[in-house]
Length: 415
Image 1 (cartoon, rainbow, N blue to C red):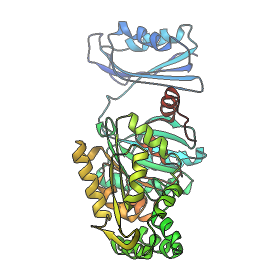
Image 2 (cartoon, one colour; image 1 turned 45 degrees about the vertical axis):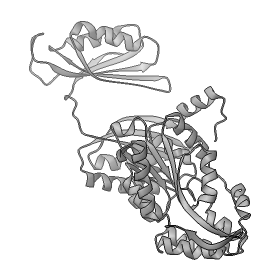
Image 3 (cartoon, rainbow, N blue to C red; image 1 turned 180 degrees about the vertical axis):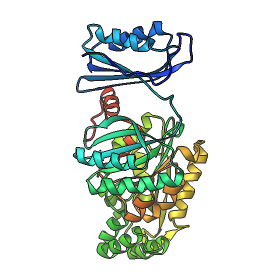
Image 4 (tube, rainbow, N blue to C red; image 1 turned 120 degrees about the vertical axis):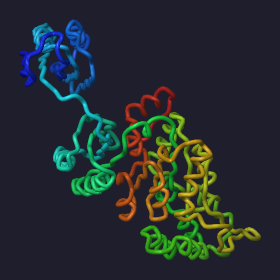
């Protein structure tokens, strides 16, 4: 490929003149030695490297380096020589503005399938709001395709909230999930991840499984649905539903434990986060009698849930102690974070119902998982795929990293 150069708008300068910023881009078939050849060519120019990005897609290489140099044309001549070498690549050099430090965001897109039109619409929303896509990388190919966009913007916090809502609406119209999470150090290192249980970690609602043994499942399910939408006070609705269990033998708890089904991807999520040294916690408006053993089976130490009163081997239809409602869930998140020495900025909350809103708001990253509309609107990120490990790309964890770790330990991955 021929070399092309773009003239710099800056006035001519001597080799010892003012520093210029130049963007060098190398493209072509990927092969060993291209990266080394570029930086060898730049070595005699006196250039200083400010930024580097290299991407290979389908065997095609794009390598960019942002450099400063002390004179006019020296980098351009080095790049022209590189392109003339027998590397089957093209190279360009053009004047560039020095890098700035805008607000950094990560926008994760998930789809099955991920279609070009959907990506076009979402990125158009970003462009309309002055947000620039600096980098795109694939996070996973199955069970859903996920890509992460590194985005820079000069927007305010209010602009960010608007961007989240707008992206979620636009993505939803095209069968995508779009989640926005902050960049920076808060995304790296150890974190506390707090999960709701019913309809989040597991597929069912435990109260409904218990009520089925009392022949009142439909009645209880109707109340649960209204409470999850935020139409009923959770504490009052819980007491109403628990009253339906009066006289039921405590022996049914073991049957309910066996009936519980984990959400697809739940084991992968927990296993991966444990490997990274994350702390996991469960907070539930359900019942410790079921949630406690479930947490133990997943290696989760922190648990907060309601307890059912039992007298002479039967449920009385009452709850012991204060109800774990939305305020109690947020308080539990803060308590667990303090106990682990994790700042709130490094906490993650995952839930689906109105009872989870306070902890989602309190966390550094609040994720609505197959949630009710009121929760999706207020969360930092919303996932509408049926796989709980879809949370991992939002934390910067690729599917390939997960599968490599599973393979190294001889673990059979889900999906």
